[in-house]
Image 1 (cartoon, rainbow, N blue to C red):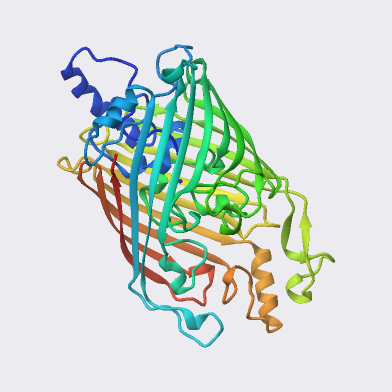
Image 2: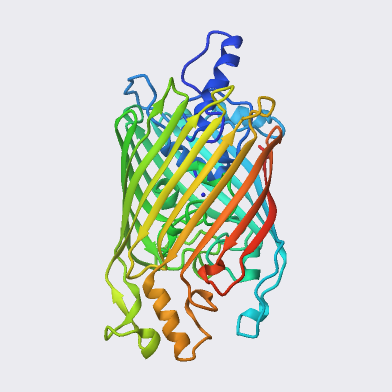
Length: 502
């Protein structure tokens, strides 16, 4: 999850009257709610795809404005709906300083009992509930307004995370029931990212460098966190399968360049050092470790997308394709140094000098209802990883988001998502070999049986309660937790809340 512009971005067009503003704001917000945000007028409601974590992916999801200007300027910062309007924030924004504060809380409780048994690992399983969450601070500075540096802005996000996640209580270590668990270092302030970006040629070229979360820009969508479960929210979990691709709330030093040769097409690439242990507290507890002593290689992603808007700007879509190459050594998931099964021999795993992953992701609003900001949006995609080194060989997902179906509830959203994860064959064979030779303890990936595949589903209804407050009751269902058929399916009830404080 991550990013730089929330609901309510300033438009560069200036309506001639207050009535014009009232007419323009809803139509501009409509584009944002479909997964694409133009240079729209301030909106009147907060939605879950506009939290602090979604800012970079929102910027990726914006086609060029319709005018053909090449003027260098900083894309406008967000003005999200907050619980209480803050005159200090307005004063700072007029001077190029954007300060945001929010809280996201996620609760999940199992309504089914876990698998019981005497096998090592099973004895700790229990039926229970958990709560996890984060408070986040975002600081954007428009240096054009502040000191006259044309087109340059800096972005920084810090978080504090708390709580735990329920999925481990029934044996799942692949997909968190609460996505906001983990990665924050269990500290008061954890740095997510801090980088500068120069925007040139009217948005046709953007160059960024600093401490960056790669998967906030690549394989990203603000729509993912309309859901809570970790197989989907933030990003489909398969894209960070190696733990070498930095995703929110982890970051590394990085460089990224994005070009838009046409209004609805972009191409972007970058170079990011691979820092060992970026999701572990022993290396990145606070996120402020900058010396690079743990750099072990580099990852180079590339992505292109078509971002059309059909039927008079009411049906936006995104169709993106990408890949990344990891230069660091990674262990084979089956062979040892002698090209035999390391699960049988116990010898060291074979090493590969490089690995890769690929993705295809799509979202398209299919229809809209009473207002342009309402409608039915479909999402689908697939992630395919190097079968020699991956845990998740591939992941496919699909989702539906139905916003504003009821005229009296224009910002409420009904959502359904499903992900299917296939474990790499080498992992499954290794675990079977280890079990065959009697080694049930110490299986890879906290497994208590052979891992093959898993499905995670979620249904929810996001309620816009009041200014800056969203409450989302939800249901999650795990088929084959931890990709193991020997674990009982798990059902959970819970809720996700989001409060935009300022």
